[in-house]
Amino acid sequence: MRKKAVKWAFLAVFIALIMVVPVGATTISELQKKQQELRRQQEEVRRQRAAEQSQLNEIALNISGLEHEADDILAEIEGLDESLVMIMASVDMILDEIFVKEEDIAITTALYEQAQLIEAAQYEGMKLRIKHMYETSDVSLLEVLIESNSLSELLNRLEYMEKLNDYDGLQLDAYIKAKEETEELKEQLEDEKAGLLAQQHELEEEKGELERLLSEKRELFENYEVLIAGARQQAAVFSANIRNQNQRINQLAAQEAEVKAQEIAAVKAAEAAKQGTSGAGGNYASPGSFTGSTGERISAYAVQFVGNPYVAGGTSLTNGADCSGFIWRVFRDFGYNVPRTSFAFRSAGTGVEYSEAKPGDIICYAGHVGIFIGNGRIVHASTERTGIIITNAAYRPILAVRRLV
Image (cartoon, rainbow, N blue to C red; front, side, top):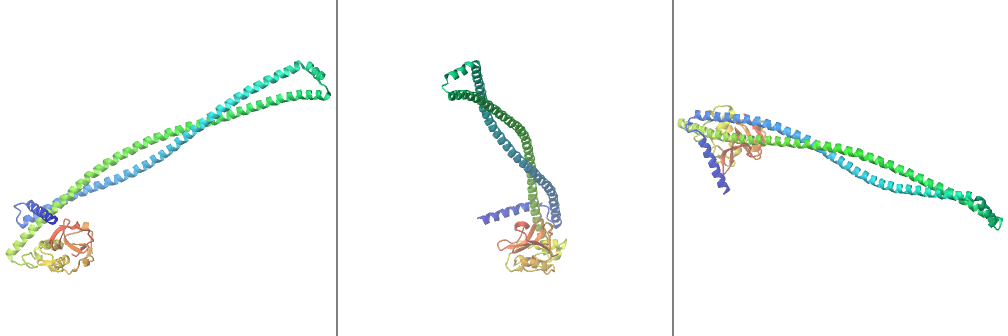
């Protein structure tokens, strides 16, 4: 079913191409003029395509540059994001430290206030005891003498009173020292808190600056995305134009090939009317019947055998030939001694780039060869099913292009 569908599709294209040729273009001269006009149109479309391709290449370079710059900005944004996260973490740590310092300061303040109260109470009690002792010193001493039963007891009581005074003094000194140490600790904690607050302020300022830079970079990145999107839209337009131009070139090439076939048929008919013979047997134009460069004459000569059969190992242009046998016979009819196998053709003559291929050049594939007839097309002995046909030269990967003439 698929083969039948392809056959009918090919037939429909063939009929459409025939209909393109004007009804009045029946003479060889008119057919040649038609071919020239089709080639001129193809060249014009190719020039347009080249201009479009040049602009597309510029846009592609522009997109590449914009994407590179956008990637750099994105890397900067990622770096700023990381720095901002670190600063925010530092601020959180400092806030925790400030909280702890405030708690320590509150505790130290309470201890300081308590030390002040104890110091004041101790001082007041000591003053009262001293005042009482001095105010009643004679009585007390007399009482001590009277009440003491012995010298030893007297000395003990006097020593006790002295120790009591010493104890009061030591206690007072201890409370004063504790209060002073607590005050120093409080001042130290206040200084440390002040330092933490200063760090917090500086970090908050740095955070604000980073947020500002991030905002600018993100806005710039968004602008690049807009520019890249616009460039891609332009590239899509040029790519669509190039595709349309390629289709147009293929259409014109197909029309030219059909007109060429009509010219060959007309030449064959004229030649048959004159002499009824040809250089290859049958009603075909002889090699000397064609004009143009040698390569153009060879390709025109080869095209007239389109439709003849493919025969493995054959070298007959009318009764059947394989791919290399077909080329061998065509070139032999022009007096050239060329290889007989498709593999040998890959090293024959001079190698050229496909973009520089001219009519008469040999297009080499893996296990196959064909004759280039111009406009991206070849004539070749294809398969037993299709025989000798004209197809697009790039229908398979091209391994080499060899120039023998």
